[in-house]
Image (cartoon, rainbow, N blue to C red):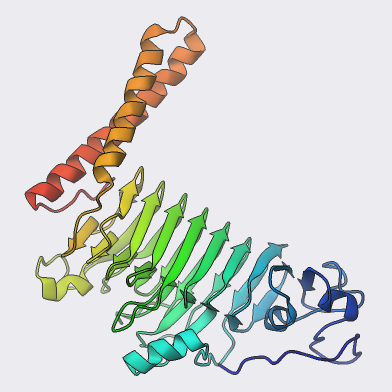
Length: 376
């Protein structure tokens, strides 16, 4: 990807289709990006930039970049600590001819794989927060490449995403190729290129292979209150979340559905065929402290799948916590004289009872070597 260079021109330039910056915006802690730009560059009415990348390049560490409503056709590389905040439902989408991404992180990965990453957004090294923006990464139908990512986080970088939508990763519509990831956190194939992410209220859909991949020793993710939706029955081994090669993830209160493979080899217990299975959560040689709890996994070939590695060590802790909650609400129900509180406590008892029952089934199935429950 050809990186946008930092614009040294100060002031508004009339007649240019892309206004790089104005004095007050370039020196401020908050920059504004919009479909059109004008001085003073301090609001969505008068933004300082029409390119998100140019605003990133101009930002000082810790700056906030407000991305105003509109559609932006560009790929981003982020190597500076910034906060991207959407206002007015902005959408970032691939340009007509996506280019290879050329951050130090992508180059290090490419040196091992021999490929060339194409990322809609590449975060290499810094801490980045993103909220209220839709990222649409849909490559042309027929594209088949293992290294297509909506967002990539590597180089020890950290992404905190809230109220974000990742729409697409890889070819659209999907075509059976084993590539295309909504969010790639780290990379552990032949190299430990660590990444970290915290997701809250994120929606991920239309991915070719995985909604989220947390990969490699040193990589970690906390994923909560997030909805991940696969393509439904298809000749494709999709996974909602993959945690692999020593990475660690805490997964809670998520909804993962519609990862259903119809290929003849899907559902095989053979280690050689694991890539063609379709699971809500796939643990492929994960770090031992990974956790799945209080989540709804439905309409997947497998709810939670293990391929080698150790089981999540915190599953027993999750069961203990849920059981404690059940006892507490049961005690409230049995002792209160307030009819409204009793009714609420009854609802909580029913909910906690379901959580305890599902965790017990999940743990028992793993210990017995049986397939893990689809609904959790």
